[in-house]
Image (tube, rainbow, N blue to C red; front, side, top):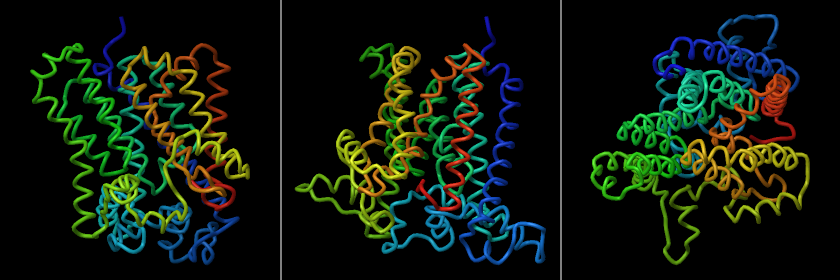
Amino acid sequence: MRNHPWTNKTSSALPIPGVWLGLRLLTSLWLVSWSAVRPQTDLENAVPPWPPSSPFGDWLQRVWLMPWLRWDAWHYLNIATRGYRPDDGTAQFHPLYPLLGKVGGTLAGGNMLAGLLIVSSIGALICLTSFERLASLDLSPEAARRAVFYFAHAPAAFILFAPYPESLFLSCSIIALLMARRGRWWAAGLAGGLAALVRQQGIFLLVPLAWELWESAERDWKKLFSRWRAASGLTLVPAGLLVWLLYRAIALSDVSFDWQQPKTLIYGLMISGSATRVVKVQSFMPPWQALWTALGNLNVTNVIDLALGGSYLLLLLAGGKYLWRLRQSYFLYALTVIVVSFSYNTGAVNSYMGLPRHCLLAFPLFLPLAVWGGRRRSVHLAVMTAGLVVTLALAMFYTTRIFWVP
């Protein structure tokens, strides 16, 4: 009989910081090399990445920070630097990540971009270590570690280290499920509420958390009602979203909802109506309709998103039965994330903007993959190699701003 994962923390956790550090350094060096080929900011144009130059602080910033300042990172930087404004689209970005980035930036001498990257890096480490502990509850230590490795090398996984909120969101989400598995429902609800303050998808955690509570009550309504105090802890998940909605309504006058127009439930309430200032064309529709739109406009960007998003869909189709047997709450969460991700359409030119990044949030899909990968070394090496090659290619596209929008 193997030891319970919580009784052997040292042996299960030590390799993960090494993976985290290696990927952190590799992605940074990879991005700075491509930023020399295609610089995007004034500092990148003015200061070469090599050799080191004076003033040394500017050179360090140019090498370690500026290659990451792309796309939505600008919006998070603006929020951390000057706060939200109702007229620039920043109201669509949830507050916990830029708030922590501001704290980190203050500690870093006022450099808010450094603060955001610090939060992302710490979040990535917490995410990976927590995922191993969660996976160890159902898999062998070796398979649990493989799940983390595959996840860390997944398509678009470089975003865990970028000034984006994914690593913080995943940390909160994984910890929420971990606490639920341990029967700590208020801690689970708190982590879920924090996830809702990071991204809209945090509200989806109500599904697996409620299912875990139902399972803990042995699917007995009487037992469930007798645990009303524990169940009350899960109200912290929608409470996190409600706090953000109240801030948007009071401070930004950004919340609007018309009962005669149900579509305003998404754009106007759940998502800021000013989101179109960031992405001009966007909407939610049935996933088959969004997929048909993308298939009807096969340019380079759409092909990349469809291929990579399709890999997650394939994992769901191939591993869904195993995941359901392993833990039904995980299956329900992964299914919800994938369906919603494939329902988000951003027009004809770039139909599925951010699809691989959104699908990455369905982290339970890497559990069945970890089991399959342990059967043959060749499969394990193929998964690791393909994942690393793809995520490095996407990181190159990210910093050079060609072909693909994260």
